[in-house]
Length: 555
Image 1 (spheres, one colour):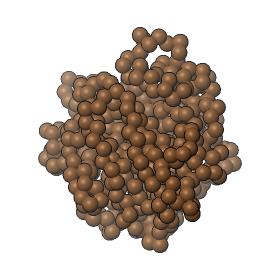
Image 2 (cartoon, rainbow, N blue to C red):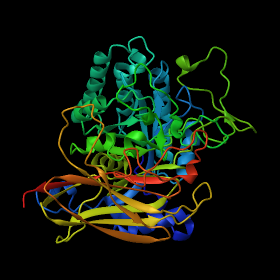
Image 3 (cartoon, one colour):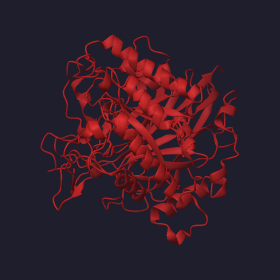
Image 4 (cartoon, rainbow, N blue to C red):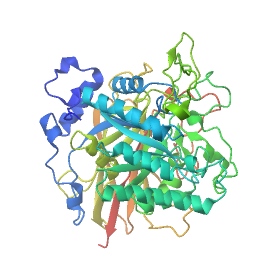
């Protein structure tokens, strides 16, 4: 692979006149972070977060945020449509710095498809070293739904994925919903845990430099139970780092597109025999386009955070078939099929819009990862550290979050980090927002209406691993920011009590709000479901951030 090169917006040799508005905006953010050009390529010299964990206060390094998508399907997935080149090109056009191609497992994938796609990925990395392209797999979890699995580039990346697919994929083994072996729940759940432990062992032994796992659309079928998600996390928390806070297929409910029952994310299912019985019926919907597990303040995500362990959220396209697109699947040559080729025929363009629910990578859903340098391992390190925020509809150009004690100098800690304080310490949460500076791909100039601060008490590991409630978590501040433009900083005072806690952020364009799922006393201005068939995603956009943890010791 060629030496990695900086993206144009970070490369000082590229004239500002040659950048589009998005590039200019991102270069300004990079300059404000103190990481520009060669400094960004070489990495920050600031003290890393780990060095400050043993003392009070703390100061994380300067960060730049790279935008990406970890869930993309090409002709190497049996149910998709586009070539690798089409999707890589679209991602670059919509401003993505990194992309993960996650093909479905299938009879032909491990034998034929994965090696073929790997050849294309290697060529793309060599031809365009400014673009970070990962190879991954959408794993059918035994006893559950799907996960993104992806590795750092290296000599064994495709071998690890195909070995993993053959040994642990629930679809190939017959261990998933609808398969003959689905009823053996205990065996299947145990196999999923062993799969994650196996991945951790490959990283630990150096067979691959890095590997990460994220659960995809966890509430779409309701078969990812709370105890399973905790078991996956606890099997190897450095590998199984989180879940999609918002699924792909965000165009599924564009009015008039798919029918009167369509829901954003294709969350149109009812409980089945394999669904976990403890989920309420309303959990099978999206709220402001976000999964119920994430969107419910005091819900499943918060119940996991309240244990004091990081569990990240992301968003992505899950690109299979793009809304209003005019391409259709090509025809098979005689005697060919997916099982004996591992690849669909190239698509054919038509003059007629084809069925679809998705957006192109980066067109609507974006995951922003904080890094100190540019490269594959930097992205994976940022994801593992939880330095992540996400938005829909290009709602924001930038978000920088720092929490510090009032009397401390330095920058404080950022998303995914931990701040060590004493009971009674006064804290300041600095939230620097850079508003959208250009129309989004729909031609709308997004406007942020409010920023919400959500706080939850850390109680430690739960006794009931199927718990999905965090009763001490709620919105503690709702800041009206309507009409504010450019870059501004909100300085929000907090006080450390006697118990450790965490804070996370959320905000929206203000177009669709209401009492949260657990009531207005918990969340007075939260996301709400749309009417079936009437869910224009561009008219209801949100951002979410990962938490910052505050570890409180005695006075």
